[in-house]
Length: 42
Image (cartoon, rainbow, N blue to C red; front, side, top):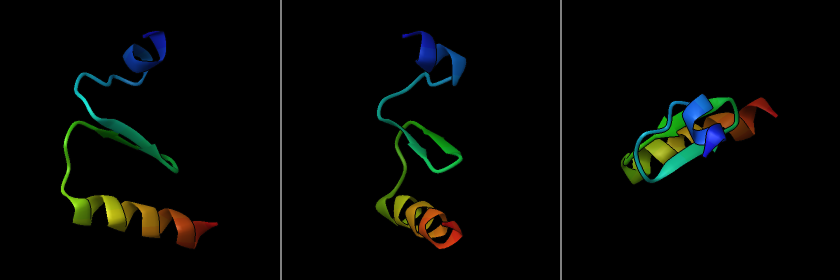
């Protein structure tokens, strides 16, 4: 619970993808783009 508060996650689902915080619902295309960006930066 403390971690979610520290990250300011108020909704569900919430994701951490690389350095990006994704609070709440997002479309599949947005999630795929964040995953692709993270994979490219490795």
